[in-house]
Structures are given as structure tokens and as C-alpha cells.
Length: 196
Image 1 (cartoon, one colour):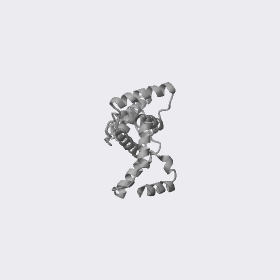
Image 2 (spheres, rainbow, N blue to C red):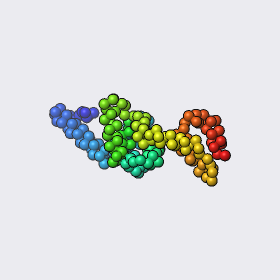
Image 3 (spheres, rainbow, N blue to C red):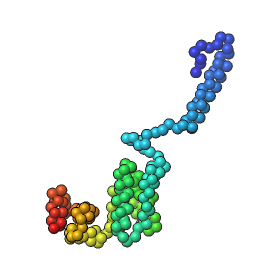
Image 4 (cartoon, rainbow, N blue to C red):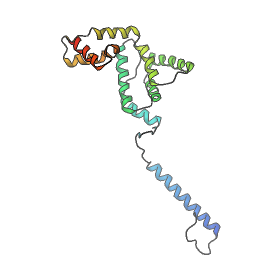
């Protein structure tokens, strides 16, 4: 960029060289300042896609335990509920949710996932959170366990439990019998009926 008032008698080539040198120095200075004080970006505005590294660090701050699989459906249920809560707080894409859920799998659970992943690739199944949950529930809440939980819901009574304890158990088990409580009215009716 030539100076607004070129010096009389100065060689035009020297002027260009001086201008280029100044621009180079200015650019080097700007780059150096950006390296020292990077421009801070908003955490996750609207459609901004945060880097995988940063997203992973945010996810890890929740200290979700690794899931190793096993026969206890209560362990699987607690792990799944916890990770659902984390994803709700972080607003991750459905694909990223699968990636980070898989990151928490170890041992038998990781082996299970490797089989599912290969099946998805072969069948070209979309890598979505809904599909992951279907596979997870089929593995860790097979029909026999789901039926057992549904029966537990159907036969649930308050007994010696406090109302709060009873309501908590009612809510937890109700997801295994959704057809019994399709409306809020039916839910209330079932709650009151089995409370007695």
C-alpha cells in the first residue's frame, strides 16, 4: 500500500519495498498478538459447532463412570439416565451423543458396541442417538427384564413407603408400562388406584 504522500525524489521501487516491509511487519505483529491472546469464542452459540476436543473436555467434566456392561439392568438404567441428563445439558448433536456414549463403554459393553457398529455399517443404519438407545435397551433391557419391570409397576403398592418414595418408584417404573399411562388422567388414576 503506497504512502499517501510519497517522498519526492524517492525511487518508486524503494517505496514499494518499504510498503511491503511495513505490511509484513504489521502482519507479523497481528499474528504474534493473536498467539498470545487468542480471540475468545462464545461457548456454543446457536449453530456454532464446537471442536471435538473442547466438546469432549466439557463432557468429561461431568465425570460419568465408564459402563462395562453386565447382567444388572439397574446399573445400565442409571448409566443411561445419567448420560441422557448430561446430553440434555450440553445440547450435543445426535451423532456426537453416540460418539461420546461409546467413549464411555469398556470391556463387554465395548465388545457389544463393536458388533453393533459393524452391523450398522453393513446395514447402513444411521448413527443416531435413537438407534443407539434402541440397541442399548435391546441388549441391557431384554423383553424378559422389561416384562418383569412392567409387572413390578402393575403390582406396585405404597405399603410402608412415604408418598415421596412411592412416587419416585412409580415414576421410575412407569416407563416400563407406557401403555397403561398414555394420558395424564390415566397416570393419575393408576397412581391413586395402586396407592391404596
